[in-house]
Amino acid sequence: MNVRCELCGREARTTEHHLVPRSRRKHERDEFGPTAELCRDCHRKIHATWDNKTLARDRSTAEKLRAAPELQSYLKWIRKRPASAYFGSRDTKD
Image 1 (cartoon, one colour):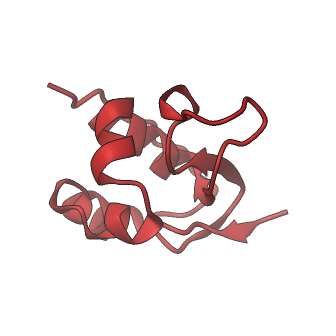
Image 2: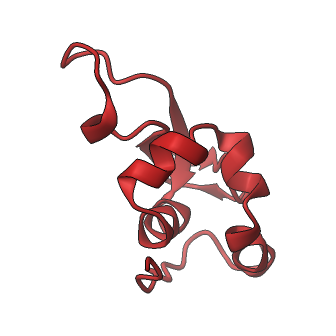
């Protein structure tokens, strides 16, 4: 079933993105916190752009991810692409 990606807004198959990466959580094992439904292109782009520490500290909401300057040109580009295509992502982390 296709759902609207919370990052790019395309109707696509989505994956569950943990807004605070599971490796950075200090809670019980079964409490992984809030998630966002992201298409696989956006999900890969996020993890290629930031490490888990940065995601937990600075990009822990869908709103913060959408507003990130690092993603603006990507979001403008991906919104024009068909959701059925898969583009992957290059690793851009420092």
